[in-house]
Structures are given as structure tokens and as C-alpha cells.
Amino acid sequence: MTLTLPAAETVAPPTTRTTRRPPKPLMLPTALMPPTGPSTRPRRPSASRAAAALPWALAATLFAAYTALSVSRHLHLRTTGFDLGIFEQAVRAYAHGRAPVSELKGPGFHLLGDHFHPILATLAPFYRLFPSPLTLLVAQAALLAVSVVPVTRVAARAVGPWAGAGVGTAYGLSVGLQQAVVFDFHEVVFAVPLLAFALERLTLRAWAAAAGWALPLLLVKEDLGATVAAVGCCLFLHGRRALGAGLAALAVLTLALVVLVVVPGLNPDGVYPYLSSVDGPSGDPVARLLLPGQKWVTLVVLLAPTAFLALRSPLLLLAVPTVAWRFWSTNPAYWGTSFHYSAALMPIVFIAFADALTRPCAGGRLPRWTVRCLVGAALAVTAATLPAQPLGALGRPATWQSDASADTVRDVLRRIPDGARVAAANGLAPQLTARAEVYLFPRHPGGAGVRPEWVAAYDRPQDGLFPARQEADAVRALASAGYAPVRSGGGITVYRLGGEGV
Picture 1 (cartoon, rainbow, N blue to C red):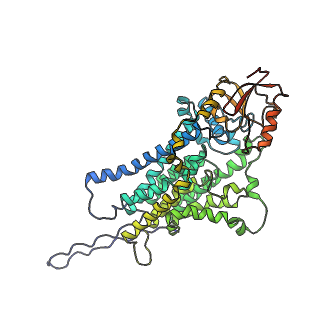
Picture 2: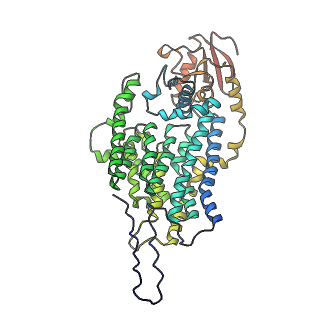
């Protein structure tokens, strides 16, 4: 499906010497061309500058909100080894010129044997300057926030700067982005701005630039190869056949190479570990894609902020690869809106929304008041759900208050020296990964022949990555394994192999 441009009207020259009629104005272009706005009158320079600055101001505001939320969670000990600790270990290794090995995943575990995300290496210079998990969280906030700029610009070109800012606000507060902010750190945040800028270039018919923005997605995560192929198909259908076919072919080839060769070659079991969830049981493929009903709820949640108008734009087809693999998988975690899995869908959904606002309907173009009502509806849906969403925590005083218990925990963990080998509970691991070699407790000590000198564990474990009973049994077994408590406080205890007393 292609998005076509309306033809400009040709004004014939006058044939008599009578007073000339002024030429009819050209039809406003669709979202695939940069319109001058809903009004044909030229803007004052000051107004143009304000309109150009508006997307960046919105991005800066959201960057501050995203950063505050994620940093607060880390300071309140709500981040985890799976996955902030894992990614910090990878970036830390890149920063020191080593392969991205994560001890939390297992001794010597090469992370490119799990997912293909070499783009993480771009964070290495920043981490070398600021070796902390906060570096990853701030980088994540920046990547998500900058994606607001192209989304807002596309909407502003379609419906004007202020209505465009409304679309950008709804996008920045969308469930997909908020869930990505609140669940530690993940490589997919690189895909969000890349997709947003690629789609902006598509709407401007800057075909080569669109391909250029889409190409790095192949370095973010292997499943995005299908999305890059979809962008290539879009270029092909718009007449850029060589460029589109080349991009799609490269994407498919890279996807096959990564899944069949690269990841298995670096995986300790010699496999691509996620094929099992894709294979799954045989049966009715339609039922597998559309059932259970949780999948329909996810689609409603993702599309409701656009008043479902995004369905009118063929740009939404670029979301099909991601939705398809998620719904085809047998892993229920992929079916809902939690975690980070919907982040890469958000630029597609909202740029499709902006495109839909300019597309002709049965009665012609949507009236300006209808457009404003639709943007208002998007903001109303977003505002109504905000208190229940992660960013709603910024309105609660506890988010901004110091946590004495967390301070005590960090003080206890300082008993572990820098560079030590330590097995830490999932909730304690990211407090240590910047300065120690951290393994996962209760999988270690003892597992895979690894015997860390130190252990950091909860006194009263809760169900989480491991069942509470399993973790409690492992704590009780530490004494027989030769570990003694050396310091306690804040609900945790640090143990040392052959240590003495608290």
C-alpha cells in the first residue's frame, strides 16, 4: 500500500485582458510532504522559531521526568541484576576493551550469544567517564526523550505546532515508553529514536535518509531485522525499487546470519535460545496469533490513545513484524504491555496517527475542529491513565524522599571490597556491578564451579526471579559451605568465605 500525494492544480493563463483572477490555492499536502501548517499565512520569524523549539522543549521535559523516575528507582533499590546488572556488565566490558561477558548470566557468558546488540558498545565512552549503572539509566532516558522530537515534528507539519505538541505529549507519556523507563535498562531503547527518525524521513519522502536511519536497527536486536525489511518494502512500493529491495535483502540476510550462525556460535549451548518459544505447539495459526484475549487488550491499550485513528494509516503496517513475533511466541510475557516490549511500537503508532489526521475521509479532509478534538481525546486518554502508570510515581512524595533503609543496605554492601568476586541476590546485584565481579545468588556460590569469596543476600527473601523458599534454603546452606556473616543491616547480610562475626 502506498501513500499518494494529491496532484497540484494547474492554473491556466488568462486569455483576455480582463482583470486576472487570483490563482486557486494548492491543495494541502498529506503527511508525506512537509506542509506549512493548517494556515496558509506565513508565520512570523519569532513564531517559527518557537514552533521549531517546541519539540525540543517537550523532549527536555520528558528527559527530566524519565531520568527522575529511573534514578529514583535505583536509589530506592528497585532495580535488579536481571536486567540492569547484566547490561552494565556488558557495557563495562566494552568500556575496558573486552568482550561483553555477563557473569550474572553465567561464568564467561558472552551476551552476544543471547541477543545480538553490538550497539551497546556506543555507551562505552560514557561509561568509562562515569562508571555507574546511572549512566545506563540516563542514556536510556535521553534516547527515549529524543524520539519525541521527530514524532512531534511530523505531527506539527500535519496539524500545526500546538496540536503537534499534543500528539508528542501523548507519545512521550505512552504506555510503551513508560514501561521501558520503569523496567531497568534494555537495548531496545536504541531502536525507538532510530525508528522515529526513519519514519519522519519517510513522511518527507527522503528515501535514502529513511534507509540510513533504519539500517542501524540491525545492530540493536535481531528481531528488528524484520522491521528493517518492512521499511525496505515501503521504499520499494514507493518506487525506490533498488534501494528498497537492497535494504530488505540485507535485513533478511542479517537476520538469518545472526539467528543461525552468530548467536549459536557464541551461545554456550550452541543454539539460538529463543527459537523454542517461536516453534511451540502446532495448531490453528490464527488462534495462536489472536488468542488468548490478553493480546486483544494489548492492541486496544496501544491504539486507544490515538482514538484508533492510527489504523487509517498504512504506516501502521511497519508494526506488524513486532506484533506478529510477540503474539506468535508461546511466552506470555510478550503478550501484554508490561516490560519494554512495546517501546519500539510507539513511534510507529503515533506517526501513523499524525498521518491519519491528514488523510482524506468520505467528506474530504478532516475539519480543523475535528483534528483538535481527536488530539484532545488522545491527551485525555493519556491523562486518565497517567496516575496508574509508572510516571505517576513522580507525584508521590515518597519518590523524592531519601530512603534510610536503602542507605543502610548500601552501607552494608561497602563491606565488600572493590574488585571482589561476589554472589548477590537479584535486587542487590546492580548496586555492585560497577565495582565488583558479580554472580547471581542463589545460583552461586558452587554452581558451575564458581565459588565467590563474598555473598550478599536478603535475610527474608521474597518471591521474585527465584522462589523465596529456594533463596532462603540457599542462605541457610551458606554456613555449611564455609561462609560466615560479616555485616548485616537493612534486611540484608554480607557473608564471607571463612569470615568471622558480624
